[in-house]
Amino acid sequence: MVLDERKQQVLQGVVWSYVETAEPVGSENLAQRYSKWGVKSATIRNTLADLAELGYLKQPHTSAGRIPSDMGYRFYVDHLIVETDPDERVAQQTRDQLDQERTENLERILRQTCAMLSQMTRYTTVATRPQPTDTNLRQAFVAPAGGDAILLVALLSTGHSETRLLAGAVGKRASDEPAALTTASNAMNLLWVGRTLDAISTASGDDLLPPGDLASEHARAIYVVLVDALRHMARTVSENRPVVEGAREMFRQPEFHDVQRLDPVLETIQSTPQFVDAVNLHGHGGVTVVIGAENEVEPLRECSVVTSSYYIGTRERGTLGVIGPTRMDYDRTIPAVSFMARCLSDLLTRTA
Image (cartoon, rainbow, N blue to C red; front, side, top):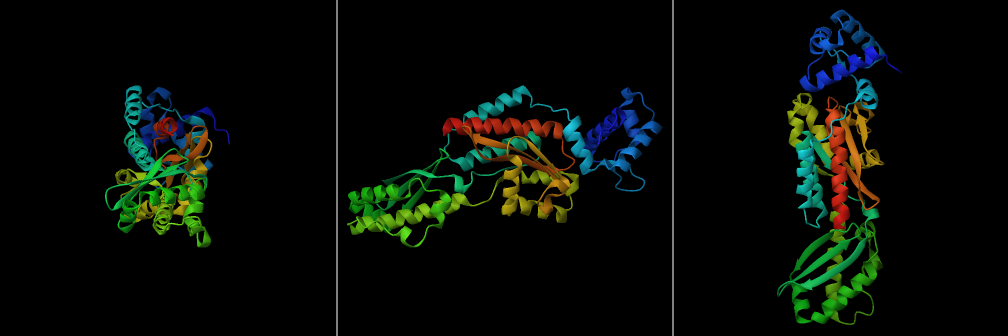
């Protein structure tokens, strides 16, 4: 539905006031706050009533002012938003801080990015990892690490690596017969490189048996331990859980001072596979804003989720986003999510 200029102006004023104060907005408040409109309180009161009748506003209590409905927020985001880009000084500091991140550990990079986005927006942030069905083992490196340990380094198609230190009898075998370690490592690369993490983690039966040409008993024993560690690594990396930072920001929101309302939200964000699937879907193709009842996951229907895809090169690999109350500062949050997704994509592309 198309709203006339007066209704759009008043709806915008209600959103701005409610985002700032978390208190229902009345006509007197708007008349004083936006005196430049040159509109009397009675006229604003009538416009508020019209917007409520149309479904853009709601009245939490009979004697209270109005607050935006999900429909009102949606109209605001689609038609009235005034995006405020991050301050250039802050933006440059953010770029510089991420540029100093030389680690190849994807988990650490995602956590750092989420923490910075949470600090920028004052909301809880989330990032999904690349899907295990879309991530391959590119190469595995094995080396002795002392008298009784082996270091396994798995290089993934994301350009990042996972390391595991394997101690015990296998290290002793590798130390006693270095050639057996090389043989086992070569066999592992020959048979497992190119497989997805999902295929590695779910392999079973004959797939796990050492190849028949591993004549050395030591090589066969080392191969079994290496493949077991590789599968454990694949399962760990493949866990369908998002990276979450700034969960305490939820407690700062008046809407979630009631712990009984907050608990389901935090539990959903941190442990529900459906949430990861929904966020990945929402983030596809640029910035997406999902408001209140638009959320597919029930506990999030009092929240808004703003997401954007991140890339490695030209390939979409996951989603970065912000979660907060529907009374979210969309003007700042949307450009902040877009900015941080670009920064993350640039960093991952450079380090891939």
